[in-house]
Image (cartoon, rainbow, N blue to C red; front, side):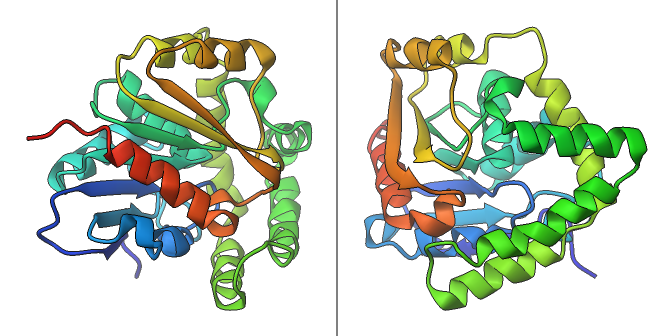
Length: 262
């Protein structure tokens, strides 16, 4: 039986720097394989973890965004992580790690949604329908995800792993995760302003198309913040760690350069 918060690690155990990697919704830790293999991160200890309920992992514990952030913060402390990187749902967990005080340091947010409006209307509709009529709309979406992944710009071997992981997802588990996720996005908070005021270096990374986006107001707030770097990857990219590993690794290396010397 698989364990909750299963880990995938790379790099030397005694590395001077360590990074915690949180994958996106429906993805497993190995979705960061290509990023972890990039030369820009050579010599860095890289710790990726599958979040509960994702890619068939057990759905255990408090799966609200604050609950996941607390546990991820414990992992970051356990592995002496200097930087936290999250993609999509994992980026929201990384955001709450920062804003909730579970991690203080450079944070990289890949493909994050800061409000409900940032999420694709189709995805919002599937979640809403599944909450009303049962999990079958989400089950249909999970049948479509592997088809979408087949067009991903990634090496064939990695694409096969991505598709295998997507097929492990269970609709009922996803609904239990996505309800609290959308509640978090819908809270009466200005997450962009909170990020800008956090005092920690933050990178917000999106593709031009494919992985959600930011409202104009959010983008303006982040661009005006001294400690926030907004990165736009050209073209259409849906799975950022899988399809843009070189650009992702470059941003993580930039974040590592902002870690204070001991």
